[in-house]
Length: 253
Image 1: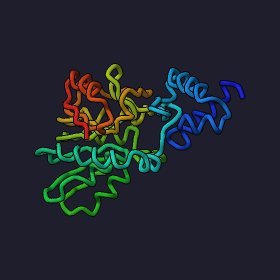
Image 2 (image 1 turned 60 degrees about the horizontal axis):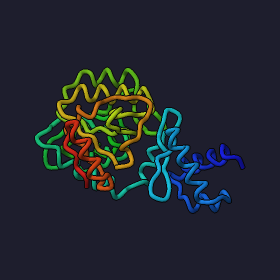
Image 3 (image 1 turned 45 degrees about the vertical axis):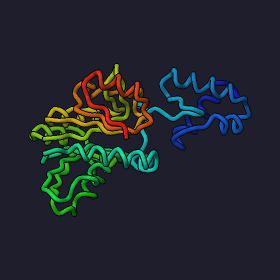
């Protein structure tokens, strides 16, 4: 097996399972661990993987994006903590935008039930989760439904958003970096996120630590546009401080 074939097998395995382990790969590919580590470095240099201690996970790109079903199975305890902490930042907001994705859905479910709220969302799953909540009015944005994420996009979606003034937007991203801001693989999704931030007085990013340092295809926001960033405690405090220097409060839970 050539190095190119090995690396193709590694990236396919990472995308299939969500992460890969050096020891397991070495056994499956019949090569030394150092060979696998070298392959992972090459794949990271090409922006296809992010290395971790003992392994790597795939970076989402214009050609690869994880499904909502997959996101619901990865980093679940961290996502629940992040969602709870993000919901606590609601303040006196009465109108909210809740982004597509599993972590924003968890935020929606963690919102208080004892006060009237209006939630605007492009996510069918979030709308469904909130539809029977007594004090919450749900506005589902129309548009083309993307099958992997079950969220609406295109001009119908952005046109509806352009007519709103929203107190607070809870935004997710496929990647977030100090140099390139918040990014996502699909231009249609990027347009929805851009318009949601434009329509909102406050914006809070919520996402696990693996999003940090990753860069996807379409940039939709700068770090300085965020009021706060809520992420998992695995993000090093030194890295959190570097993001905070650009403006937002960084909360690690």
